[in-house]
Length: 287
Image 1 (tube, rainbow, N blue to C red):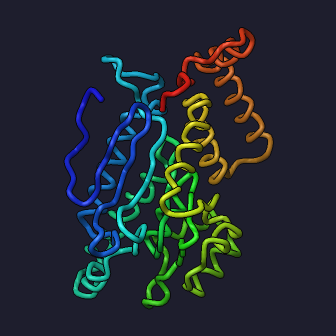
Image 2 (cartoon, rainbow, N blue to C red; image 1 turned 90 degrees about the vertical axis):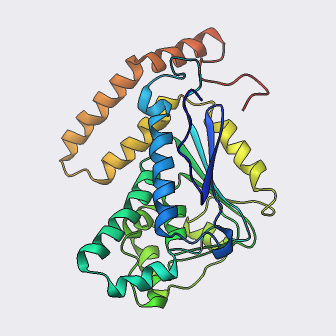
């Protein structure tokens, strides 16, 4: 990297070529999200977004350092994330409505930053992901669990609502499953999480999740990075589309034309016709 990442205390960022690993390290409370951790994660997501191929439309910066294409979200310790810090939530009882609103906005900035990140995001979920931890899971593009993984929209057990994570969980699970799990607020195991769509695959163990993540990362890096970002933005546009069908068809035709005529599109088509690797594909043995 040509510039250094922001300094943090409760999470770390490790950059390896076009791949960055964001790791939660607040293990004494099972990586619960307090105000400091939320702000640090949001800052790192903003920094990696600005250092991404999707934002810069080129593979390297002016010094030849790779821009980012994949973000791995991990946690140290037995559990991925126990949700929002219980003390932070309890303190909401003595805060003003404006202060509670600011807390909610801070948390949503974290989830939205992960959901809309221009890179392909992979979450490795060991142990439990509760409440806000489930929100991080829902905001990721690909989720790897392990046999001990348990996920819960646990807010109702505390008499509160899963509202901040709601839009992101709704998009990942759909209406019926989100409604059921938000009302039950119970933990579901790895197999049930796979069935309803909270996770995408189950590793043999927590220790083997890295191998699964490496395989997904290698696959992503064979695709055009701008095409990957475009796919994510296309889905976001479709999620909120309020025009008629004819307008949607015209919009999709415009997007197809732009991507096909773009430098990346032309490079990919030329590489295919010439029987060579496109410029964005790593050499064998690289990341």
